[in-house]
Length: 324
Image (cartoon, rainbow, N blue to C red):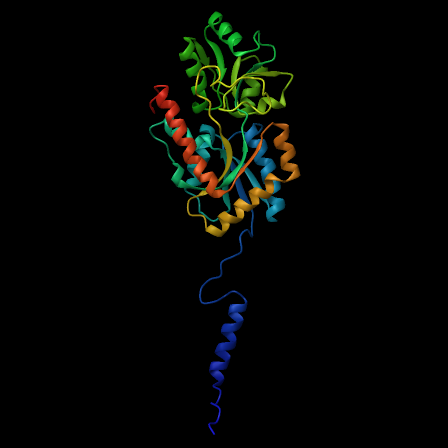
């Protein structure tokens, strides 16, 4: 009968240490921390007070509730979110630096500018959350109530000022002017708050709004929807396409991360956005601005970004506009 092999005390101790290390998640290499375990920075590429900022702050609150960690909003305005995106591009892809921004900054800017410090492929997209009621708006006191009335007014008042929130939204005024042989002046402003100040302060007669005008229903009116579909908040107002100028562009808010985000983190962020889409607090803020919930998961968001870029390039080509 074969006797059992004598146990080597050193092997036994080694095995016990390895087992304990594995149980503690130490293993042979450094442990990967469970995401998230610390504060998340959420960049907003606009000044405080506009639609992107207000939706972003509501998102940050809901994200903190869903993920169980603080979410700090950092406003980094400039170039309709382009300044913040250029910075985000260089940040670690670890899930702790994110940006909430309109898709158009990435999907329209390349159609207008030859040199852009980022592209669709420089980022990962956790998902899309809401759509915008983008519109051409005027103060309630304006002596016109519709698009034709606006055209007549501008013909009688050359140089009427239009306030865009960025170079890309200036395009709508220049195309309306070109199509109707008008002289529309440009008054650059910073974000949604700048639009409010320009219109209500009497500095401009027309402006681009991504939806912030809905917060001032008695002080602003919609002249035309600048989306391909009619605005949710003003369904009786025609789109710019219906008015004979086919430049309407739909856009969504998108949660953006530096390229190379771990797949499990990207999946968690995408699932989190789905939960935020049903979050009562977030839905109340979105509803107050007539920002329709329009959730897309990570894969759908990336596909939509490419679709929008192709559509926007085609719109610019048809308008005879080359990137400058």
